[in-house]
Length: 145
Image 1 (cartoon, helix red, strand yellow):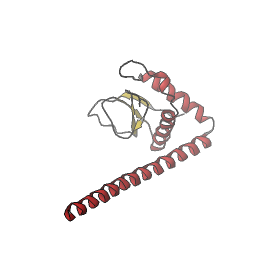
Image 2 (cartoon, helix red, strand yellow):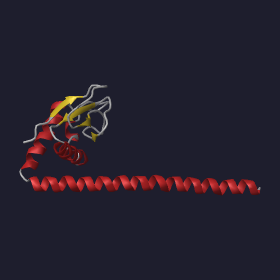
Image 3 (cartoon, one colour):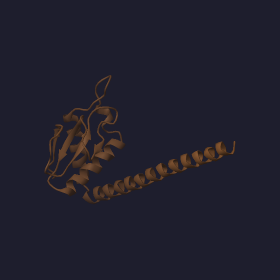
Image 4 (cartoon, one colour):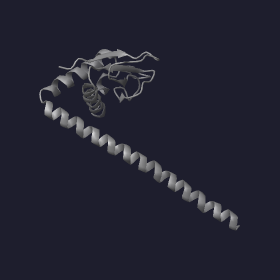
């Protein structure tokens, strides 16, 4: 059984154990992050493997909109630390019943996320190419006039 802790992140605090952050305010509540922000929880684990497993499990829960049910607040929605912990614990306990399936799931999500990052970089480069092409076209036209 994994032993992980969830706490409210305090700005400026340094964590020595493997950890990641979970956004707790806004429509992206439940989103796991590597870097902290002012409105987040911190999950600390004993091992890097547990951290990776919980990170991708949390990402799966966010993408599957499992945290959305627990959002509270009318102006700025948020999730409480107890609701976040409950969702994570239930999902983790359910996934422990079939550890091989969990690891396969984590690896698949990791691969999809890596491919998504590559596509984002390609889109950024394509946008830069488009801008450069447009700028070169108009700079040659203005010289000819």
